[in-house]
Amino acid sequence: MKIYIGSLNPTKVDAVKQVFANDEVFSVDVESKVAAQPFSDDETLEGAVNRARECATMKKSEIGIGLEGGVMEIDEDIFLCNWGALVDQKENVYRASGARIPLPEEIKAGLETGRELGELMDSYAEKINVSKHEGAIGIFTNGQIKRDEMFSHVVRLLKGQWEHDQK
Image (cartoon, rainbow, N blue to C red; front, side, top):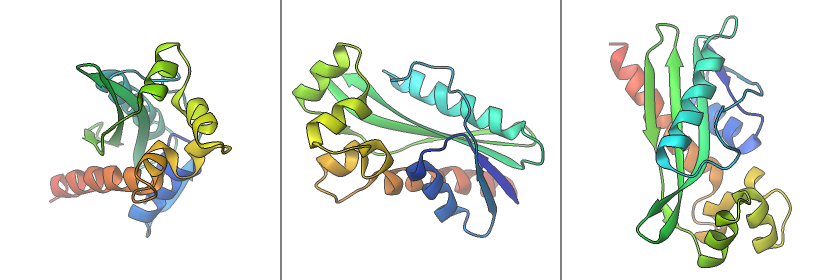
């Protein structure tokens, strides 16, 4: 089966390759059609669905997958959030979300000025391309959960829903 993921980010691509290990996985650069830094569950989910739909329409793609990381607010706190979507050739849309953890006040303050989480994390962790490696989840869980693991959990949720409907 041919699966297209709407991202060139290695953590997202690796997550799909882990879960769909026996399939052909292709990564493509597609637009999320949302802000560079999604700032709600709705916006983050919309970005994932947009990416998945775009991939599902590509030639010879049987499944399109979109994965989107964002942040969302609960009361006064900002939480890391992530959403995934899987769109098949029948145009069925499957959605799933994963881990959430609160982000420190320092990161919240930067996000509220319009900066992106990836940029803030590089500065905070004094590293380059945190979003392409352990991600904010890896930094703030002391390496217990890394970004590819977080996204592979979401992809497993998507795949399981899709497989259930194939029965």
